[in-house]
Image 1 (cartoon, rainbow, N blue to C red):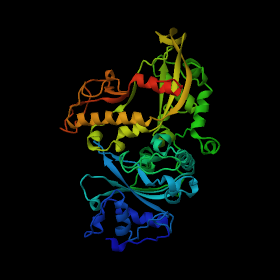
Image 2: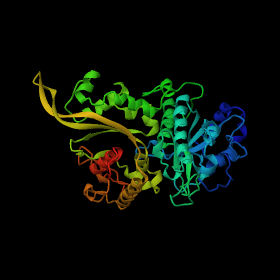
Image 3: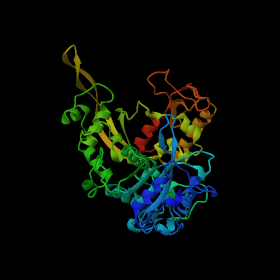
Image 4: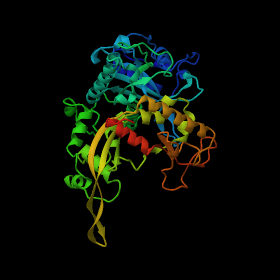
Length: 483
């Protein structure tokens, strides 16, 4: 089969076209007598050697350096609904803190190798030989100029910590698209870093899981198993900021400036400004925040291009006049199958959620009342309710100490899931005061998920929560108060 295939090593398009013959096949289909090898990156090397018959290189050049093209193989997983999902971030090379300290972005390992990539998506199957893993999609991806501006800013943020001797404080939540992901456990072979006597956990340059998710969606939207963005401009779907704006200011600064314009305004004033009908629902604070951040162009900025690629989440918080927080903060429902299948905390969905960045928009009570129009029997009447004004907004990343607590939280959840002990009271409760808890968010208590242990719809729907006292702690720390 393979003997009839050939490609031009100097042409990325030819390499891509040749790679598409892998789709629907495994390496064993082309090399039935071959032997596999161990290691996460081994599959990519096997593809080069066995399929492309190309010598693996270990220098800073891309794998297909004549075409300036890097080869990446990345796993997908199959959901309970039989949907292909991104399994993990795309690792783009280890970070050598001492060697790379002070290296400009355009001279970096990432820039030299990963601006132009052939990404082969394969289906991960536990216990299956790498030679028998099936390839599902191929994508020829040149990082768009707009993304590159954000990635360059991400790189500089990471590098500034390394240069300051703070590599041990790096977090994937520091950045948007390009992350410094953990490799191994925190105490496993820590590496020396410049300007500090503290050894830092091993980390690698990576494109975040959220960014990879949008790349997979791009292939799916094409309606084919193979797609390329090299010949057409990828449409800026639901973008919050333009390429021109990003060339002048950072993404963070652009959004915070938009919010600052409405500081001291209540919801009623925000709704009037954007000509949005006022509502008495609690969701009005979220509606107002979305209108401010997007200029009333989007009802949910969490679904915008930049937020989706970054895994960034905006949350609105109401603070009472005495500084207390009444409501805990909810997240998505627990995917029990994902928890059951995943043995590693840093590869878990919860780690992705908690280690990504948040944009918190704060509304604070004034102690006054405002009149809200309410339609009753065909007439507009008014009802009085507490006034909250837009007080502050800030980007936040969970500190490493809190992520350590979150790991114990996840480990307890996984323990209960493995034991099929998915019931009220089995998980951390709010009364334990451990920053996080589990409780339902389903509208109906009769709603059930499939138990990964029994395969039966017996598992009640629970979701991840921040305790309200933890939300208060986050805001107090931001305001410089001692905890």
